Length: 405
Figure 1: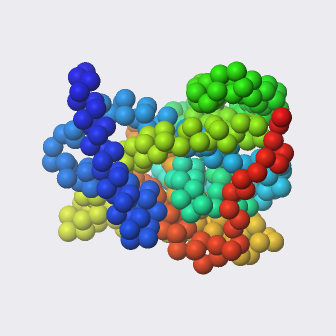
Figure 2 (figure 1 turned 90 degrees about the horizontal axis):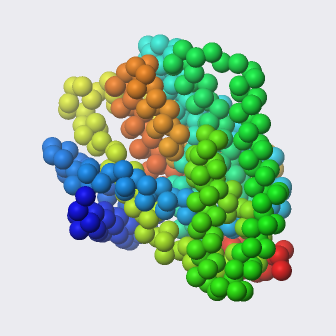
């Protein structure tokens, strides 16, 4: 592998992200939409040849995942444990409806289009999870990451991924003909619960004191390096028990959210996030096959029709999740819109179905289109809904209340 070619590929992808983000911002849209679009256009331009990033795709994927983890870590830093307690019931309700309704609607639409029950299960499961990374980035751009609605959305999105893990486990077992037992599901649930409790109760006070000690004896550089190592370790722990690494990253940030040095940590991560998280979104965009949108190609028409039906199910199911917020009618639509973007769990679930032969190629293409469109629709909804009610959303408080000494 030529080091020079890696740097050139990184330069090209980041420049594309900058151009797309700049254009999106100047037409009053979230920068992330421009980054996704830039990746999709790059893939379209090179659809007849070999993409220039293909040789380094694995390495780029790792860099992008690291950037996404850093973004979720930074988001976790802005949410206090007492905030979790205050919005916990609402988040659980939003997550539950946001999983159940897309699954039921996706399953029903699949059956209406004549798909088999097994294929319908895969389709429904692929529509359940929310993309925490996309939603978190949009909320950050809108500067409402500290609002009650944002906390509900992010907590619910993380719960979505955890529930998605269980659904993915069940669907994978069905696809590969494995036996599903209550004991195996209970054990998985116990392991996940134990991981959360250990990090948030046992590890949290220890890592907070360690970060304070490092900051006093080593300075900002030591704080940045230690927090990054901690982020990587907790993300590894999440992956080791079957969760997505971004769930671990969010929990790692949450465990440091009341640390005395959390503002120093957050500041040290910002340049890193700006580059690598943007790289991740450009790479996501490169997976979008825009040639499937051409209705003049006969083979595309069934895919497009099925995609439209599934898109309605996907958007409606997540918008309905806002109904779980009983006492806050003003923010129901915002919460539902924030849950719309689909994430990696959907891609993983669909890919498993494709690999085991349970999911036909045209249905998988429809799922990719739905994931692509929801990645655009969610941020657009938020961008146009939130400014109308910005007075309802307090900015992130810059204070030291509740921080550990």
